[in-house]
Amino acid sequence: MKKGIFLTLATALMLCFAACQKDDNPADNNGNNGNGSNGGNNYSQLVVGTWLVDNMTVNGEDRTPQNLLFTFNAGGTGLMSDNGETENNQFNWSVNGSSITITPRNGAHYVYNINTLTATECAFSGTVVPGTDIEGSVTIHMVKHQGGGNPGGDTEAFPAGTRWQETISEYETYYDTLPGGDIDSSEVLTEIFIDLLFENSGHQGTMSMIISLDEFPFFDVDMPFTYTYDATTGEGELHISITDERSGETNSGTLNFRYDAEQNAIIISANPEELGQVGEMREIVLTPVQ
Image 1 (cartoon, rainbow, N blue to C red):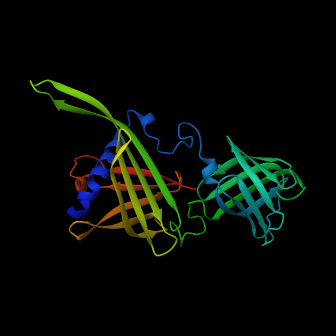
Image 2: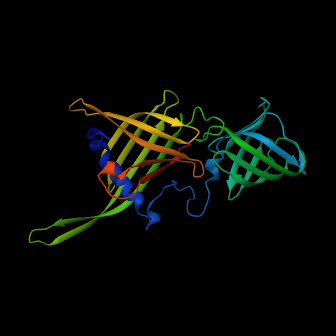
């Protein structure tokens, strides 16, 4: 990494990596933005997007439909597309623990158990076929078609059109030498907010960072980037460039990232040697903004 961009990134990145590395106080790190990381799940995030039903059984018999899509929107609304037909197929949805409740326009409530739900596939079980009055022992398997910040069947576009964020909070102790040689210490709350936006087209985006000390922002920068992404490996590179307003000089550097489907997260890593530090690889885990 060139020194020009290092001067811009070093403060933010080193503070972020130092905070992420401290595992002895996990309560200080809100890595999942309050989405139930401490023993819960993030089903309400993972389900967002459009899903294709690729297997359905009723009482053990194959009843797989053709081109049946379910779209779960952030905020609890949804739409079923039955081979392209969507009229009067709106519904509401909500997740409670390991179950999801579907409420169609007629006001009925259908509860399905979430057997599996990852970034790319899900499996529900219940007692009624969605959108019908057919009852029985129903199992539904779906694969991600597009959206929700996940690649699924839309791997050529991903991560275009997605946004990822992370906020890290850490108390730091600062020491000052007073006249006479006494040492004074103070606790300062350091917060780092990171926003990673991939634009809808052009393989470009913006990485923004804000660092605050005791809620007072003192470092705020927007860094445009272009990127490459390999859908087969889930790995990519951010090619960042930034121009010094005073000198007009533009410098550039590269950060590696990968998509973790199990966590539904973008993970940015940096070699500690690039940061002038000694230690293991440091990582920032960013979760999707719906």
